[in-house]
Length: 263
Ligand SMILES: Nc1ncnc2c1ncn2[C@@H]1O[C@H](COP(=O)(O)OP(=O)(O)OP(=O)(O)O)[C@@H](O)[C@H]1O
Image (cartoon, rainbow, N blue to C red; front, side, top):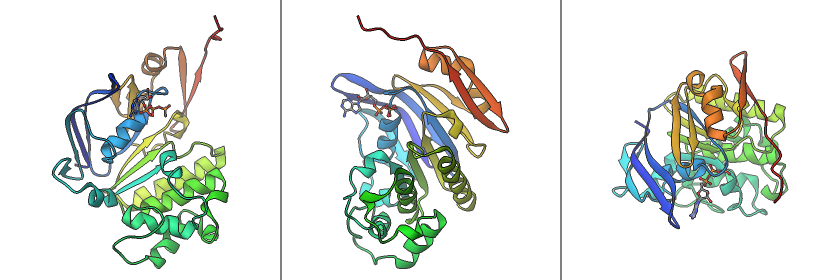
């Protein structure tokens, strides 16, 4: 099992940010997590990667129960892509070093192991950022940054890949390249579980095996994309009428909102 959450709650400043979440992610599962702003998606990923601790309930990741394991070592088997990482990377750092840092789940330097020259070049080629290796990270475009972070996440050959809005800021073609690359890598690493947070059901490609919809810190639906990504469930999540369209195994969503007028 890759992730087991049992009755997990996370409370801060008196707010229940995650509420009684029970979830099992098997090896090789590919889940997409959707929900409105503030519904708890990023908090869920931070909890799974051990950056935050549950207020109650238990978290087990890659067979290790939190509280009984050195999280710094466990995190080396967990790949992360997300804007929260982008803020931690010094803008002047060379792309080569950003990717190499993924080996020790660190920023700036590789700790406790050799600099993996061959692996950096190999993963940079796989995600098509090998021409960027000498550039400072800070000058890259959004799409280039996301590809670099994907290479950084993959270099340690993780057993769990956490992607927090990895397609944010990508144009439609760059998004499709990103998803194709992900599908290709996931196809070669069959036991690696992938959890992807997104706002856009257009990103739910057929290789995702499951979908979760969150609202106010709870799972309001989880299961196969077909059963979960429906008009009724997404209407409940977003509190507005929505229409889900399907074409060639992909999804699209339309919704209508009323203008909120200032008082
Ligand atoms: N440490 C904290 N202290 C107080 N509130 C917090 C803390 N961390 C998260 N929150 C609150 O928890 C809620 C969920 O945040 P989270 O970032 O998980 O939502 P999200 O679903 O990822 O949102 P978005 O789609 O906007 O990225 C938000 O209301 C946020 O303000």
